[in-house]
Amino acid sequence: MDVYTLIIIFSGLSFILYGINSFVSAKMISEYNRWGLENKRKLIGGVQLICGLGIITGLKFSFVLIPSSLILVIMMVVAVYVRIKINDNISEILPALAYLLLGLLILQSSL
Image (tube, rainbow, N blue to C red; front, side, top):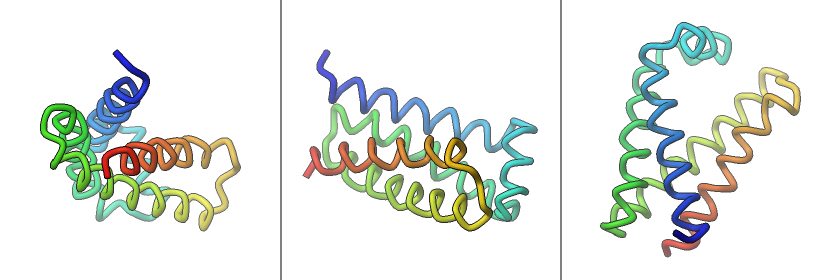
């Protein structure tokens, strides 16, 4: 298995877990409140879950990989913006930046 495939699997599984946790984790629910996105939590979690599945599905069906990774890249740009806006420290911003970079790598490689 090559590094690119591992990145896709890691990223896809991460977003699937983030999506699920958006619905069931008390910590994630409180984070959405802290971010000021409590009324968009289910929508964001659902999109993360669907796109995470889409990224993994994209290993077999490449036409799914581009839109899934593009949506997640956009979401991570917004996540970085929100974290900067609410004055999170750099250690809280770095995971979103890392997922943004992974998403950009996946998107660029899938074009």
